[in-house]
Image (cartoon, rainbow, N blue to C red; front, side, top):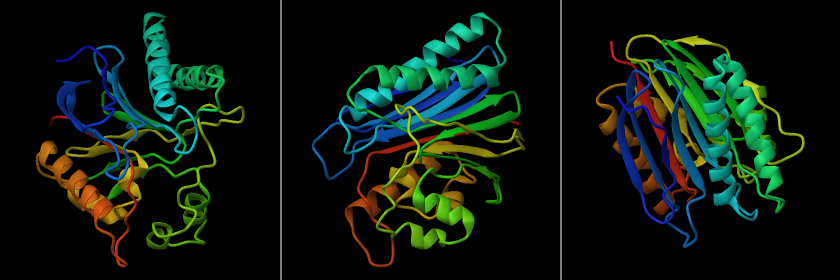
Length: 269
């Protein structure tokens, strides 16, 4: 059992991790965009919260704004520090997460350089899972047969259009405004979308991913690749396909080079 926080923020090369944490198995991957020489702006973390709970998080520094990498790292480290303090105070996990995301927002705002980042969090406490969303990174819970049991909505014009039924998910992946994000850590009007509690079923797979994955793969493709089989193989399959899509443009499939980060988690049964 690993009791320490795990953070992946590979600046210029890909990083993979296979670990035991929070009573389950975790694999994670992060890599910079294949088309740029600047650093990876994603940050991936798994933060233990007591003996049976873990907090999974992905932050994606906002491209086009200054200090994206620093913003994502600052947000994750602020969340970690807030959770560590809350754990000593035996605070309820839900309250601790909300306070931690607020602390992350204040920390990025305090940088004072206009930086911003997304932050998607999933808590696993025993068999209870819950998502917390700021921005357009994604979390999902997928059953072994491929049924999506829960997923977050992207805080973006295209995300809201898909949710409202005005835009098909497939069309959204080719939309000219798919890069826009309407809610970010590091802004005065940041808001947190908290998902409903989900009871994990045998062989459910939990996924968190930056938009480097979701801008290059359709939902049904992600579900099919992660729903069964060893986690390490699922991670290799889903990240490998995303990287191929980034480097080979097609009129029939999405292709958007970007930093790519993925976490997969399962409980043993």
